[in-house]
Length: 539
Figure 1 (cartoon, one colour):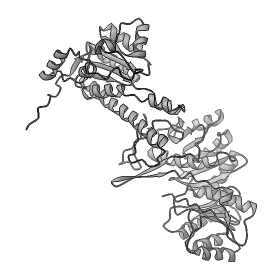
Figure 2 (cartoon, helix red, strand yellow):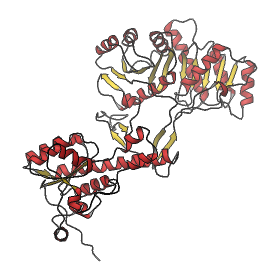
Figure 3 (cartoon, helix red, strand yellow):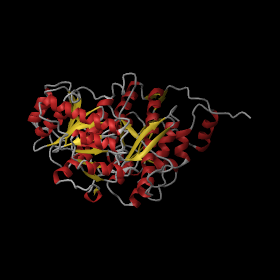
Figure 4 (tube, one colour):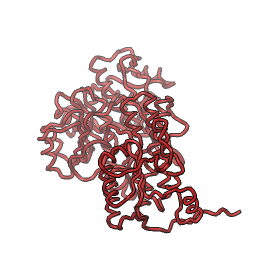
């Protein structure tokens, strides 16, 4: 049996004769109401919005005059009524709908102005559960969805930023809205309710029920207004999306100068900021990143000393790299950085002198992050795969003294232990397989992303030797260094490569079936080795 459906809307312009206003955020609503009233639009409103409009001296009818039913239950029930939703959902050029409106005295509503109870803000301020629950809007989303569904005839405004443009459209069309605008506003309205429902679902799952991985993962992000030129490669398109409840990281950093950031810039800058944040309470520290891998990391008495030491680790890879600092940028360091081509510099802040120095480099992007993100913060990491999405908790594991277990006959000296900890911190942010040599608060060599650990150890040692030759040092900094491995040494060969490079101390997770063989090799070479019991794979 065929089902008869209402005909599709065929009207382009719909005169706005009656508007329903019910807003939590009253920004701009009085100016909007005044402009509508001047056009002779019949204003209907609820609760606090009606009072605000009336206090402004504008004519307005309470919603109870339309529904012939009082607002009740502390305002929980006021707009959930056929006199409201009939006026919103009726397909006006359908005879049966028109007859139903006439029979029941339902008046058409041409414009709905609604924004929702401040659920996210209520959660953010740390409110108790009953207050949070009361700020779950029911009637508001229902009106928004009804108006948006029936956008063939009804305009829906959910964002005060759209008020001025909507009024301009009415002025240009003798008080009527156009179908194109109604379609655009409907799309924005459904996105608004989707975000709102997502926030509620997230709160229930993560905060209220304490679930780590709910059966449904409700996520909602908002596109950053700046458009990315392209993705990882020019034939790919890309965009940056921001979380609804705010955040603290590279996506929120303030860009002071330079051309627009690319996908790769953001990815590399994020890697640099995440690593330098590990030194949030440490001495001045500089991280240099290339293709999301650190190529030089150092701490020093001054930021300039830290930069010079980090740069010396790999002067070739630093060209066109990303630099991050854990403290405000000063003029001396800015001058040194300006000596080579650098894509992006990230710092909590920068002095006026440093800003002026960078202003001469028109292509360099300077990002101010403000307070560094907490390296121990919780959160989820996501990676798309064919047909799905992998989700895991952030790698926020940090090394503590009680985790360290000396497994060799010789314990590390105080300096060796400090170098071990430094190398371990850096290795956490190097793509696997990762090997990092460090000495005196500076990386000596970094081996990243190889298919076996032995090759990573050899590459890191070779890079240290190359750096020494370029700097004119008598020996590479791997001599007397500590070496960190992000996962256990499965065989003694990787450890022996570190011995050959001059390392005297090793830090690694342990846990291999050949640990005894590796420990014996370390003892024979006179190395000090500690196990952490924690792995830091980064793929």
